Image (cartoon, rainbow, N blue to C red; front, side, top):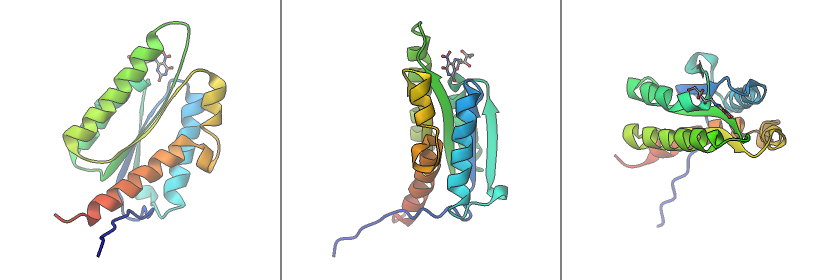
Length: 156
Ligand code: INI
């Protein structure tokens, strides 16, 4: 018989670290609200959730690496908002944060939900930091939960 393995959206008992950047905090705080709502509405407990704030998206990967290396978290969620301006800075920051988070996943082999917006303007960022399904923080948090639950079901 075909074996199908799927992860439940059940956050009970999952130790979750959330890294959120302050740059564009009018967006990132809404991503954080979304992530916390996603976790708590799926059984997540306050005591199992740690939120760490960093200055900008560029600083997220270092914290992701350190928190992953600590072994204290089952999964991480990274939240940030990189919004295109008039200079190439946008490309450098968005490339660095995306690559850095990917490297942390490969090195420490824990799920990291990617809730870092990279948008052309503020309007696009607002559209992605709304309520529930229209909030990338909510989506990233539940993706991390699903991933840890699917990994736990894999044979050793
Ligand atoms: N950081 C962001 O999180 N979003 C941005 O849009 C952004 N822009 O456009 O400059 C940004 N820059 C700051 C960067 O992340 C670092 O904090 C900074 O360069 C100091 O290392």
